[in-house]
Amino acid sequence: GGTVLEIPPEETFGIDVNLANINVMGDLILAPRPIKIWLPPGYHDNDDRPTRDGEENEDALRGQQGHPVLYVHDGQNAMEDTESWTGASWRLMGALTRLADHQLIGNGQKKTSEKPMLPIVVLLPSAEGDLLPGIRRRHLEYGDVSLPFAQAHADFVALTVKPLVDNQFHSNPAPDQTFAMGSSLGGQASLHLLLRHGDKFGGAACLSPAFGPAILDQARKSRELLKEKRIYVDIGGDLDEIRVPTIDLFDHLTPQHWWNPGYFWLDTQLQGQVMSMRQAPDEAGATYCFRQYPGGRHNERAWAQRIDKPLIHLFSPAGLQGFDGF
Image (cartoon, rainbow, N blue to C red; front, side, top):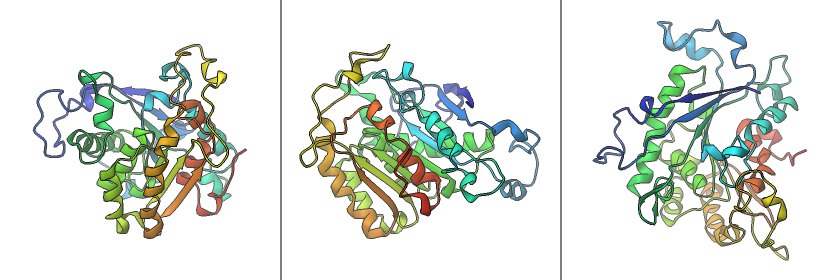
């Protein structure tokens, strides 16, 4: 369900914006690409509400309940199996609507007669191709926080994309209604967005994140910021006596990209950085959830099987954060 719209790159990447005070030439830093927006079921139920393009009083407009917003890194892998690198997606929208049907997210969990207020989802596609031979654009944009490309990407989302979304759609622009989410390097990019623009984002979900040393250091220095935020981190890989199988036949039963199973060894390699990251939100007293998935693989099919956990952590009251799924 819901409606998918596409914002052409000239409305976002074509805007002159201060990209982390970096001198940029053309598309050297951030390659233009379209951005898809998912409007959830029920979004159009109140089409007579005022829009931010009009001259209505801004305070009155903010007083009306708008949709929370979720910014998703590697957005091409989140919704449609046909668009995903591995032929399997997170199936994010199905998870959101299913959780709302069970009144586990949205304002349905308040036991009111109102329909659940599902989030608007901004699908941020990662960059394709290489900047130079062997240097992936995605690895630069989602890289450690000390990289100018990563800083430029975070500023672009916070200073260009978010204002556009809040202006054109019935969103709730408050930080505590604005979240980021991603897997692998996209998990690092999501936490980077929260740390760099904590005045605009209220939480981040990081699935099997690939944290670098600079973001670990920044998180330790940002304990006061993290105290007010919601953070979800998980990791799979070899745990105790459970090992990740080298081959899972179900990874290959996809019409597209059947040959790409993801990286079976990578969650195991990332465990050290993830365990180090736990210290910062623990000490900050943040609303923090950490989960381990023994034998969990590093691909979209694995993340789809647990996608309900980060969504519940971000979009439900504290009393439901111990929910273990259907």
